[in-house]
Every structure is written in structure tokens, then in C-alpha cells.
View (cartoon, rainbow, N blue to C red):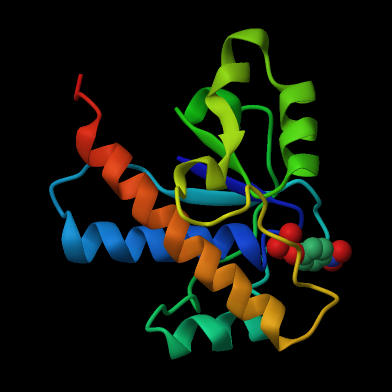
Length: 155
Ligand code: 4NP
């Protein structure tokens, strides 16, 4: 599954790190490719934002080896689920998706039953609390996704 946000240095790499950690610690038998990408290309090749990395590390997620990549239309075929962080990302992805892929493009927080919202707000121009909020929502969404992955039939 591919997580997508705007810059690929805050929200989607956080979701990637949290889900990868959950799978490796709680469900090593679940086979899933986990990646992230950005709809903008400003930060391609860079590690996650240092505020993102610091907040993640305090909760035990090491994001230092991740690097930003730019979403490419080929990703619609490479990933079975493409999960947008907010409605703006969702709309852009749906617009670009080939018809057969459109229903595989969804909001990440659809999987977070208890989050109380369906968007992960962009923390980039805000303060520290925005980065903590991204982590709270990523943990909630990743937990829901892990349940979904455990239940889904294998082919
Ligand atoms: P992200 O946050 O989409 O969660 O990675 C952003 C990072 C950078 C920018 C915007 C959002 N930017 O405009 O550079």
C-alpha cells in the first residue's frame, strides 16, 4: 500500500513508518509492501522533515532512512491501495487515476474508526502540536489498517 501526501516529508512517511513498525512487531506474518510518495516534487530525495523525525523518534519510530519520492502514475498499477492523507490529495489522485484504479484510491483515515476525522491536517507551516496530531492520527489509522490486513483473504 502506498501512502500519499503533498510533500512526502511529514504525513505520508509518518504513516509508512508507523504501519511498518506495527507489522514488524505485531504481525510479521502479514505480507504487505508499504511505501509513501508526494504529489509535489520539492523535497524529492530528502529525509523527512526534522520536526516530523523528532516527534516520531520520541514515540519509537526511526524515520532517518526514509527519502522523499514523487508520486508517479505508474504507482496506480504498482500498489493495491493508494491512501490519501487529505481530501485535496484524494481529489488529485482520483483525477489522475485510470478508471480501474479509482476505487483503490481512498482516504487513509477511513481505516481509523476512532479518529473522529477523515483527514490528516498538513503540519508543515504550523507548530509542534500539528506534528503530534499527525502521529496520533497515523497510529490510529495504522492500527485500523493492520486489522484490515489481518482479515483480508490472501490470494
Ligand atoms: P506533507 O507536508 O505533505 O505532510 O509532507 C508538507 C511538506 C512540505 C510542503 C507542504 C506540505 N511544502 O509546501 O514544501
